[in-house]
Image 1 (cartoon, rainbow, N blue to C red):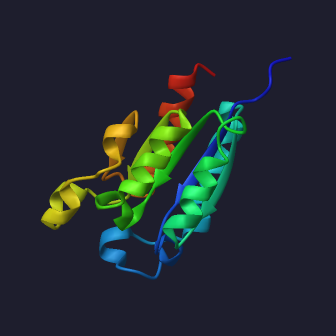
Image 2: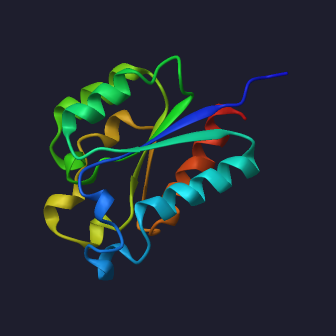
Length: 148
């Protein structure tokens, strides 16, 4: 029997405030709600997900460095770090796992500084603007990419 595929979901700074922060942009519901939805979708897809949230860049990098050999792919919502963290970009590139970048909002409809992600070039794709469903779309994409 083949082992279930495992995916890591990493959410960055301030995403722990979902449901209380700028609801007009990020919607209602918490990060915990997103994680529960991902767990449910993972069961339907016969895969597993491990969800984590960090407010510090170094903790995200440490987590990503531990991912190879444990996970088959990564979903990352790096928050503001996506726009300027070259250290995070290097960590994603070094792990040699497919990584899908996620944004809850449509970053291209927002402030100019949000239009460019420095981590996007080392990710297999970017999903933005579908609210909290962006995470679910990313999981579906990784499952398809890894041939589950």
